[in-house]
Length: 77
Ligand SMILES: [Zn+2]
Image (cartoon, rainbow, N blue to C red; front, side, top):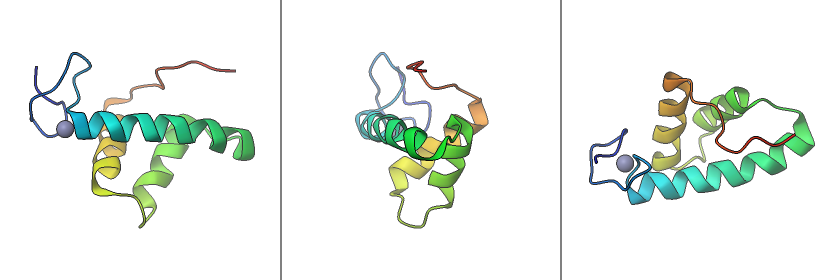
């Protein structure tokens, strides 16, 4: 399987190692953001893309997630 974003070799979750790592850190950070800001997953992804401090991997991933309309994998209330 190839990474949905960069086409490198990927594991069964369809992201390569680097994009998977970016996904995990984005996903983890969202928990904290949501508590503080009442922000939706989509809004959060837009903030990541806009943030100049966001790394390239995370930015690519966030753009991909916005395009694909994927919702957060872990549903928490
Ligand atoms: Zn990748």
